Image (tube, rainbow, N blue to C red; front, side, top):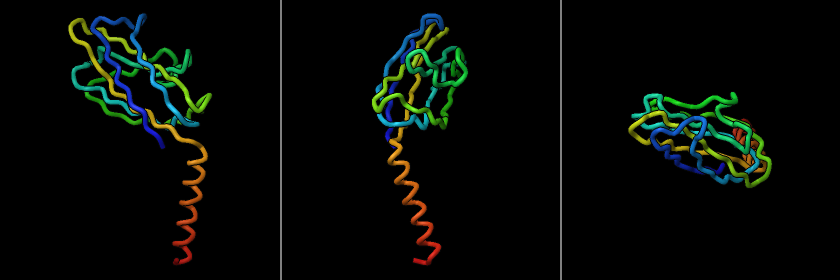
Length: 133
């Protein structure tokens, strides 16, 4: 599994109708996990969403935003990437009139061949244990 990291800084008074964005290039066959850290201070005044082109990947309901305050979360996915190198965009808004806000995002991908090899290795280990070897 490979991990990719990005930070989106969202200036104060950034409308959801005109969000800021940062692009991140990822590599693999599937996006398996999105982890994010929303630091203290957001108070639900800012939000972000992850897109591939015009397709919203997370949150999975189109038009929704992730928001919160002092939150770390990992979300499991199985999003098939259109090519082995793909550019995703993280968009964000911030209705806080005074302070900018940041979100820290980790994206984990996997090549499917790695996944198969890991599965086979795991099954072989179990079988060998079962045989007492």
